[in-house]
Image 1 (spheres, helix red, strand yellow):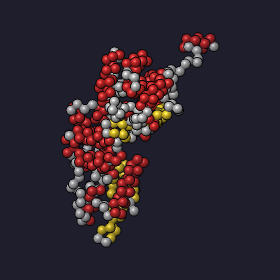
Image 2: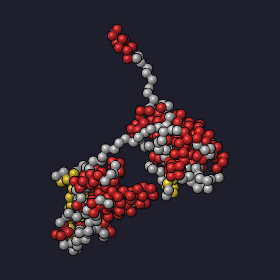
Image 3: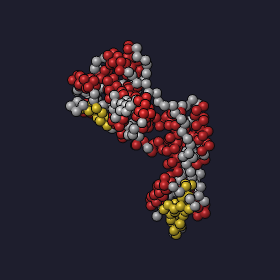
Image 4: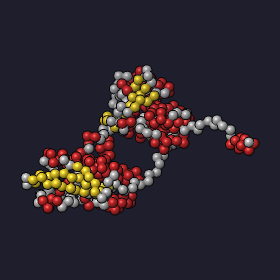
Length: 382
């Protein structure tokens, strides 16, 4: 049975290999320091070795490329000279995880691998030859090619995952991406609409689907994909609740962005009026927001045509429609809503996003003590 041990502060895995009718005890260092996180990683590697031995699929050279044991025992070279390139392994990783990704995420990851990995000198390098210095050079090349910090960090995050898997599979002795630092990203611009601007936008929107969709973005804070994926079974006007259970993109219905995104959002009075009117007119449709022919509303058409028309009619300063979601959060906090409540309504699993982006809109607590001057005067008289 494969096991994990430590020697001089370094982790190693031990196992028995059947060779020429005898049991050979093998010990392989993993290039990992002895700590809790690395012990968990080592345990996964040992479990995979055990499974491969049990099924007869264990390839020593592929699992431990730097080991001299295969040569000492006269084992076949196997995959020793066929370590895949970074680009090849990245594509293998993507295909292997396709079942766990939404269609949109799979598409985005595919573009990242194609342009930021396979389209660079790093992509052609053998997986086991990449060093941390190579990754630092790759980041600099991406920046020089015009990629912004956000794009670079997204590609780096994928490489961290890919190299972690390669380490678990024994294709690399150490994960070169583990200590590579992400670039500092500029804080996302939060530029919410004022109450007057919201009034102008809704007044300019055509009654029916257009105005109800806009009201949902402004008064429920749903992501566009979540609003587009709403079906009438998700709207409970009696309880004034919207159940967010899916997102809709150009690839069709799929999972929400995160597990926390599946939530119930309260329907405000203003939104209730719009959804009630739309319900009476379009209740026979499956989706809440549909186009003229009954198909789900097209986001690109709304963003490039409807949205710009509303901006031009009202004279409201042009901002992306995603600012509707920001406006919802900022307005809730300005009205004194509990940040935990806001985080839940927005579909965030923690308060971090709310605090990071919207803290300056939170209502300040009322002062219960003396003013500063009164306090100083009081203390002086004591």
